[in-house]
Image (cartoon, rainbow, N blue to C red; front, side, top):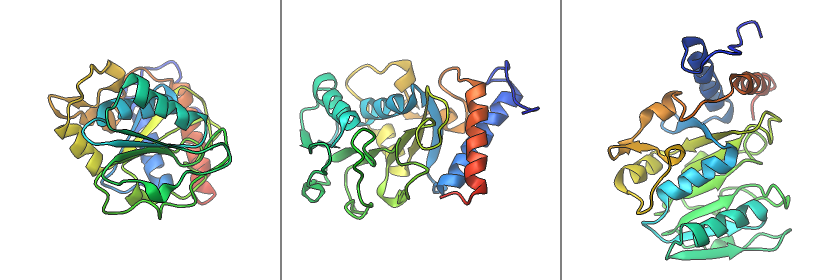
Length: 239
């Protein structure tokens, strides 16, 4: 770790280059399409999911699919915090999946790929149509790097470093599709957005967030650990 920027600013060239390296390795290991955007965001996977829910939801109906505690938390926030008027609660007990065939794909759909606290995952992405009208917002914190992600089925994907990679906490990852960018630039939520949730400036995507200019100060120690884990994943053949 002779070139590790410990004690250096993420705004310094050496720190910024480390962030850029980690984003490039993320794209390579997860086989993320070229037209999708990748960013590190505050507050772990929770922060990544919340910033997308608060920034994207509202113009369409919303279905929240949940079968464990984290997905249940997203349902609670949609209902009691965002107070979305057109909201469907599609839940199932621990150990089961809800009826995914019953989803109205005119809705935006929030779901966990692999239930962290229940051990139940979706079998694949075949249940998600390519011609969907709504966006898919996928909490993949216990799936990324462990399960194949069919990117054509995903509009938003979030995860943290500490689950499948065994990395450090507090840093979230966000991957968004061109359809998500279009939503961000065409829809302004009716509620206030705190700084760490904002992905636009002047009605346009804030591209700097997806060019390694992070929203708040990260730990360069954690980034070094993330890069180390990504290099190991790449070395054993990625996914």
